[in-house]
Length: 91
Image (tube, helix red, strand yellow):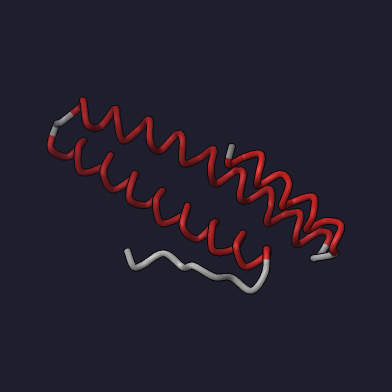
């Protein structure tokens, strides 16, 4: 992983980048789970499954944001609403 991005041009860019990040983390969780299973390390496999479940929830949150951007565009009203929701998710 590289250095985290510090500036963005728009809220949609943040949402797209956030989704891509969650996809990458999900792949890592799945790889951990598979490696643990292949090695017979079932305690770590359980941990990987728990992380994977949490990642499914995170992907769902970002997919919802992406779906709304696609459906309603990037009007100032929608962007304000999405920004507020993202702030609440971060708390």
